[in-house]
Length: 88
Image 1: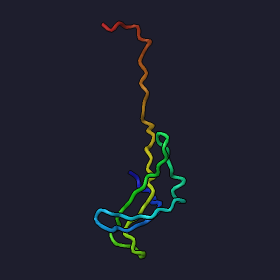
Image 2 (image 1 turned 60 degrees about the vertical axis):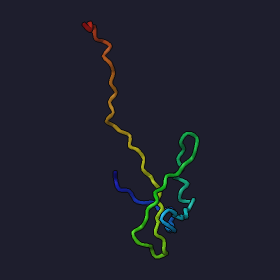
Image 3 (image 1 turned 90 degrees about the vertical axis):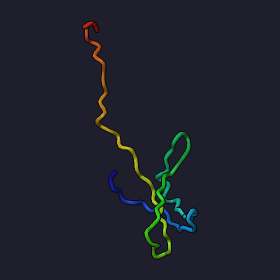
Image 4 (image 1 turned 120 degrees about the vertical axis):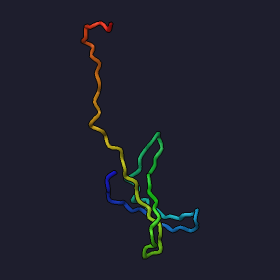
C-alpha cells in the first residue's frame, strides 16, 4: 500500500463511546463519487485523532482514493491447437 496525500473533507467529535458526530463538505466529494451497480458512492475514512485539534475536533474525515492497480503480469494462456500428437 503506497502512501498518498490525504484529502480532508470533514471533521467531527466523539460524543460517547458509540457515537461519532461528523460534518462533511460535499463540494470536496463530488469528483470522488463512484458508481457501482447503478448506485453512487463515496468511500470515506473516519479516523480518531490522538488529541483534539485547535477547534476541539478529535475526528478527521478523509476521502478513500484507493483503486486497485491493473496488473501487467497477467499472461493469457493459449492452448496449443497445432499439435498433431495423439494424447495416448
